Image 1: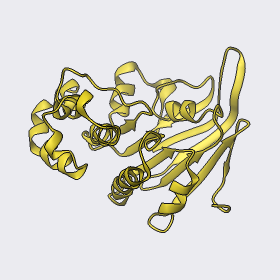
Image 2: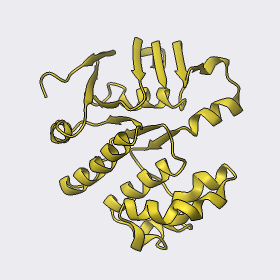
Image 3: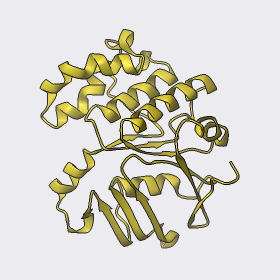
Length: 224
C-alpha cells in the first residue's frame, strides 16, 4: 500500500537518513519509535506525500509518486488518514463541521449526514458535535482529529504521537480506537515515544515495532 524503497532525505545539506526502506501492507500495524530528532515525523510525512524523497522511490498504492501529477497524488492521499501531532481545527466551525471538512473539500459533503453521527458516537463526541474546537479538552481534540482522519474511510491511518498530550486513560482509549480500525482491515502506523503504550497493546494486535535511530530503521520488538 505504501512503500519506501531506499529513500533518502535531509535538511540543509545534512542527511537525516538514506537507503531507508519500509512497507505498509494491508491490515498491518506498526509502531515507530526513536529518540527526539531522529526523523520520525519526517518519515511519516514521506509516507503520505507531505514531503518528497531526495533519493529512492516512494510508492503509494502501487504508483511511484514521482510519476504522478498533482491531482493523482491528491487522490492517493485521500486514501490515507493522518492524525497530526498538533491537531489544528477551524475555530469558527463546529466540531462536526471540522470532522466533515475532508468530505466537503472533496465535494462529497452530502455523504457526511449518513455516517457523521455514528462516527461522533464511535469516538465519544456525540454530545460535543455542536461545540467549537476551543471548548474541547486535549483528549477530545485528539479524538476529533482521529474522527476527521477516518471520515473518508481511508485504507491507511498514520498518527504522529497521537497520545503525547493526553493522560494514560485517554491514551488507552485512543489506542483502542486505532486497534479497532486495524481489525477492520486498515493499515496503521503510529509514531510514539511511549514504550509502555506499545506494551499495553501487544496482546491485542499483531504489531511490528520499528526503531529509527542514526538514520537506520530496525525492528525493535524483541525487547518490548
